[in-house]
Length: 295
Image (cartoon, rainbow, N blue to C red; front, top):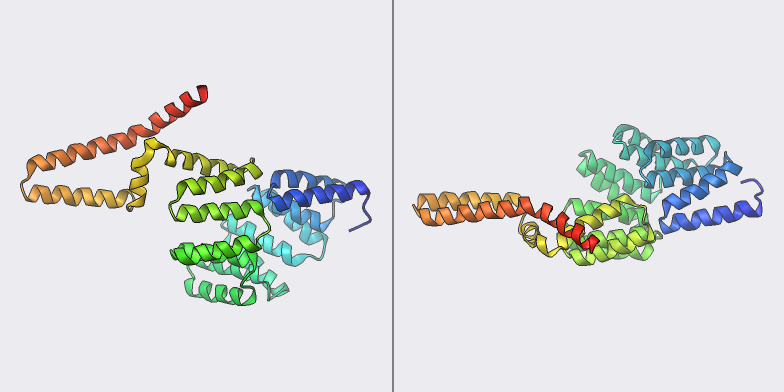
């Protein structure tokens, strides 16, 4: 970095502050102000790319990240970010090349090793993925990024006890407060504790109200915990629609075989009423929400 003025130092401090809070829109604006004074600053370019990535501005993120690679010597972090960007674009071959380039720069980068492991899991190389994750855990068992991908491995393999332990470890070491709350919210969702999950996601939203994903999650949770939608909660807790359809078909088949036609008719009418409720309840829910906002 060249010699900076007092104004540029304040801009940088504000940008990093917003970034660490997970307020990427505000952070990005500040980093772009820094770049207006120092357009070739590799670290500012990297952070601008990272903010754009978290804001799902993928093309912009890639542009800044590649500019950061050209501008300086911080290749390791830029290669890793480009790997993440390519994963988001589903350009998996290119993503693997960037991640391998990162590991060539630093073979002991536990976080990137875990990221590479998860890429292998996504692309169907399960045994290789498990081996890479084990090596990442050996390199940094308490590394924030390792714990992040370890959690999603455990979700993929449905290991609820291990997931909870991983999240507790993640919360102790993670620096991003919003991400901590999101992970705790996901853990609560896995336990079907929807009100607890909503509380965590609400806190995360208050810290980062520009995150559209958080808005969508909260809208979904509001709908799910609304008293009108209690049948949907029961449905989800008991295996989902496919299980209930199979049970209904079996029930109707058995009743028909036994010639219990009155019971068959009663079950059929009940099923029609339930299906009608599920079809009508979204419209009724929207109407009640609209009335509540007017009130």
